Image 1: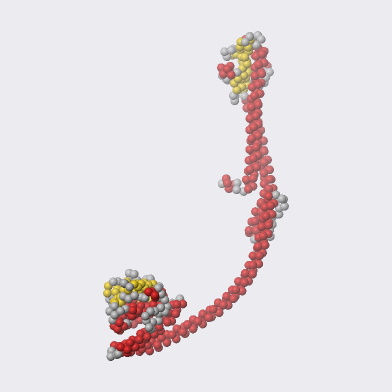
Image 2: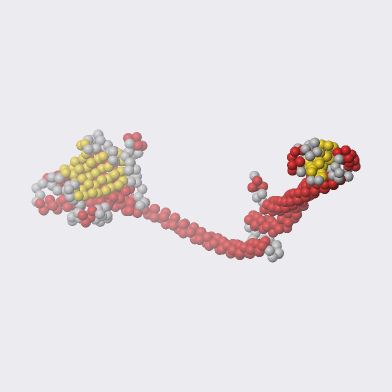
Length: 510
């Protein structure tokens, strides 16, 4: 609170000037009072000593008790010294012969020290000596009240004078600070008005060439610079606003054109998708013959080795064309990052069973066994593993991986499909090694090895499909452990969650 009261500069200046005046007055009063008190004490002692000597001189030639008494009475009655309140004549042993007035003091101390002086009394003692022998003592005393009264009056007058001086200094300080600080008040008022009105044309009028004048000059110079910059900023602001308006109009025009182009592209995309769907349907109908007849011919036998080889090539080409028809448009959208997944409830256990049925003839020809496990146990038809996704894409993903594993296997090999619901993974393992030169780019586009008709799109599309389903796909391959492909899904659908999604149409039909 004390600091907050003296926060304004004017109060601090007034307090400083008044305090300095008060300290000066108090110092003068203290020095004067001390000097006066010492001087008066010294004078009082000398006057009493002179009185005592005068009486002693009057009484000692020759000294006699009775005349001394008579003389002391006359002196006491006449009171030639107004400041003397006590007179006495004592014997050398201190016995009082005659006295006038009354004072309280120690006689023995007085006879030894010849003077007693304190705050209440002042007593001096002068011996009467005849023929080298002390006949008596003359005592002269006075109370110190007269000195105390004088000091009291002096201090009272000093206090009045000091208070008057402080009051005068206060008014002088008021005048001084107003004269000294007026430029600062003008600066403060101008800064406040400029802050509120943003009018940088205001100036503080002050002409004296002193420190405050320099400060005001610098302040006005700063306002000149700010005014110039403000005009410059205003000019740039108008230019920018005009440029923004032009740019906004141009962007609005381009946005309208872009929206029109987007609408046209969306319409063209819809037409393209519809044409693709019709073409896919017609091509699939024809491919059923291309794929079905080779299977029929191979199942009947009676073919030469060359005939069987060519028919197998026709069959595999049919399968590859079918996959390309199903996936080419979706793969393109996945590459562009614009594919929208149609989430349905897909049972991956049933899907693996369906793939196993589709490649039965291939497994037989390759003399390869496909083993499916569920949580490290042989899979059964009652096992389920539901995920959210598209049946056709997931079938393509696992069909590509399983067919690649079967094709890369040797005769009498076992390809294992391991389903782990705890880890939400499906792993495909075969005993052969992926060539080292393609291991680091196994999932890249057009990467293939050892296949005459290989396109290098199988694992690439599998990677894209896995990413579209927010799944991770990895590959490890060593000579001792073979090749392991693992697809890890981010989540597995519970029975309740699966019920909330529409089941895959393909699995409903099957």
